[in-house]
Image (cartoon, rainbow, N blue to C red; front, side, top):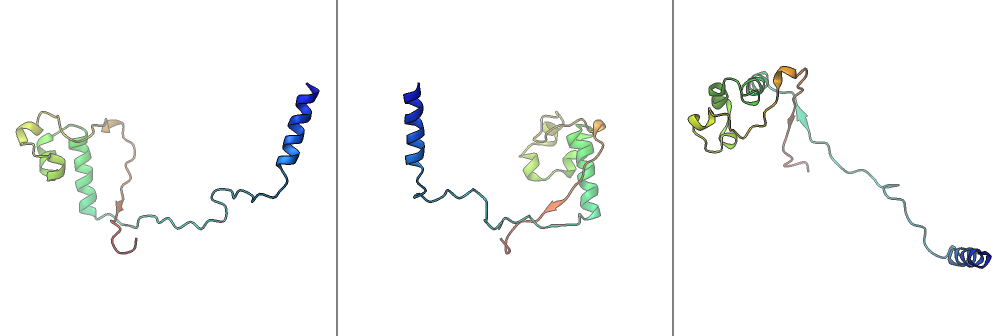
Length: 113
């Protein structure tokens, strides 16, 4: 046991001569160049449309109205008859339990990124 301790002690002392470069700590001294997407105030009409969409399509209530609010990417080629089944490409959520739904627009990053 004593011999094993001596070998370990010697290996640590001999192996740690300080002639190797210190390992840089990740992130220390590195400038943060990440960008937060710019945002702007939501147009009142867009906010109202989003609220209506949540209260209709997301809640699965008044799907006929939701169909009129949805764009082609959300409808995915579904007819109104298919949409009215409720099997739509919108994640359902119990909006009656919703207390807060903040909204913002993330602008695409074309010129500044």
